[in-house]
Length: 218
View 1 (cartoon, rainbow, N blue to C red):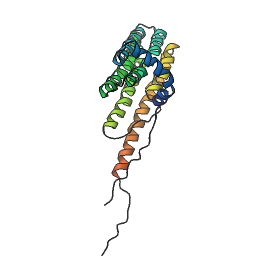
View 2 (cartoon, rainbow, N blue to C red; view 1 turned 180 degrees about the horizontal axis):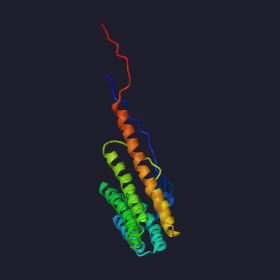
View 3 (cartoon, helix red, strand yellow; view 1 turned 90 degrees about the vertical axis):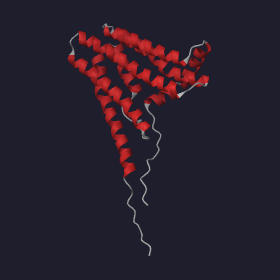
View 4 (tube, one colour; view 1 turned 90 degrees about the horizontal axis):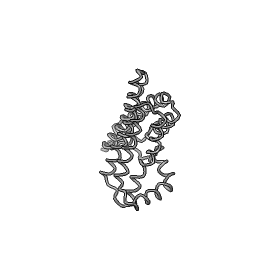
């Protein structure tokens, strides 16, 4: 009986994965210090969310550079909470869940601040770019999450979470938010399409059987 073509298990790494590996030597001592002074990993996670919310408020009031600086300062907290939990031997699925949820909110509060600012200025093109950026960001994350629950891999694409930060944060710090938003609006949605196509390719491969000659024995 013919069998479906197996999906090759190829480990794919995103820029986020590489950054965590490269910065491991810095993150672990800092995480160990935070553990020693009594901070909990989830507290650090919520501190990151609060900090990004403050950054979003600053953006809403037109303080673009300061909002970008706050965003940059909060970025290291994203990796520290997971490292802290691992060093404490307390890594849990719920902790990973909380981390993922707050990551999405951190992105959205920054974009919400920009949306508020551009609405006040009547810049509808920029507002549209903010919406497209938010939609792309959410879909990139959602496609990956949904694909993994169905047994597929979706860790591909040109603008994953780390790249989005590397694009948006400098554009805010140097007060060129429109440039960053154009890049996010276009490339994040292209990334979502890439992930969709990659999952479809895996599904297609699993459904089609190889052509084999069946020999009938008398």
